[in-house]
Image (cartoon, rainbow, N blue to C red):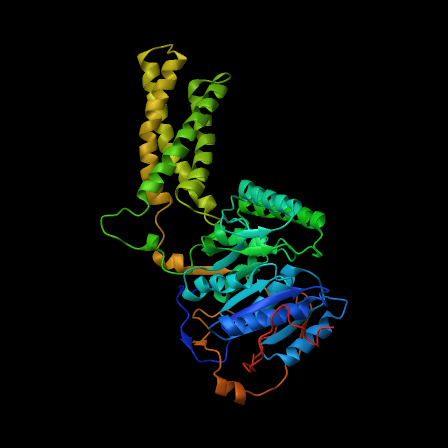
Length: 493
């Protein structure tokens, strides 16, 4: 997993202001590979829908990743005929690679993508991006598995989809319902921080992005969709499922080992009410007490089992010291992650060292209790030793919580919560602490349509791994007649 990083401070979420500017609000990416038949009807239908229903300026970007048929020719023709359409050409396959390249180069504040077959009903597009425009959410996904979704597909794909999401919930504790629906959107400021942490370049790209976003505390909005299966889909189910399972293992391993710097992007966007200082309300105290009690109860059982095992071949003092040492290391690690919410490897060694100091205090209490018991009776029963140790551990537990809360894991400053160190790759444009997009543009008026310059766009080609150059996107638009899916278009051979 990528662990390289560069510092930056992210702005709070806010409603993108409406205004008149040359930058599109929404950039819809259509990743394609050998889609010469479906590309033109898809783009025409999407363009007509956006012109009719979307209140802001938009762009449709065709991301052609190494097509070998006439898809590049169709892309260039659509780009020259429709001002809101542009195309990218990449020389390597991979849906994730195409999305990363185009999203990293786009200047639109809201980025989306959908599959070329348009299996998802387009009426869900505006509800998908509205929470991102308003500033309520960071990412948005279409869900075919929501209760109110209306889906038409065969039992095989239904079983695979539900089984895959059950695997995600069981292995990666994912709470979103549908990882692989080809209908998603993300704010550009979020994408610039999140994309460098996503390693996959294929179909697992969506899942990895969502898992990292969810673990980092970002807000994911789900939209129930109407979805009809494409019987001519070119997706290889077996190979895709195998690659996805490999990706689940890789991401799960990275999360377990702390290789992903989630603490650096946790809750960076927006005003979180949990960060406010409210009088007479302890900050997180109730939650920390519950977590500490659960961890403490399990640690006590673990300690007693260790003590009973060590006691079979050593004296009571040695068995107590060894059992307390091992359980103290496990207790500090569990409280660090579960009770006080510290993620990543940063400060782990220091926390364990401070935990050992707390362990020394607990050792002194329990050792003193055992010494007092041995002084009172020469041969105490094993059950009596356990009772004395339990009482001593209860006293040590109260002291441990106070030391953990005040010394080992104190509340972080507000400034540290708003500071984000995000991964950086050559494909990611330099990030500015302030939102780089201006007021949102409205669609041109009828007069502007008539006076807009009619200049075609040049197709920009990208090789995989190279940075997408910053380019100036024009906002020349022309008024087209509405095109219905059933219309006969002479350009469509």
